[in-house]
Image 1 (cartoon, rainbow, N blue to C red):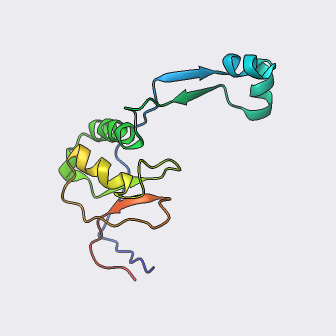
Image 2 (cartoon, one colour):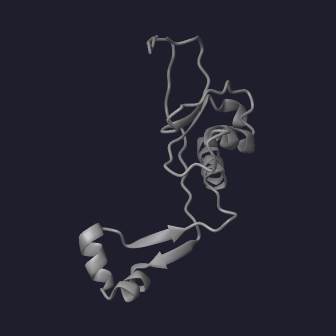
Length: 132
């Protein structure tokens, strides 16, 4: 792929957002099942707790909430979005791409959509000109 760098084009990240499932699975619960302590799990994995999504907490819904937070932080509306990138190992489906679902959910409807066949990053992009 060729990427052109132009001095008159400025890019930046003006807002970020994050979201996690609400249900928490504590190490103590896992440790009880395995006959180990919570500290034992943390020492070996570094993981303090796990988040478990329920049936309504899909990747696209969680990412859409995060995207709305990012838009709020940036102080812009969906028309200001040039690109939506969702990098995930847990897409809702192979198609449509999670990024396309997020873009539609937040109202960023002016994007030209393209998806990565590898889904990492699972992306929806707008480009000023074709790339090779």
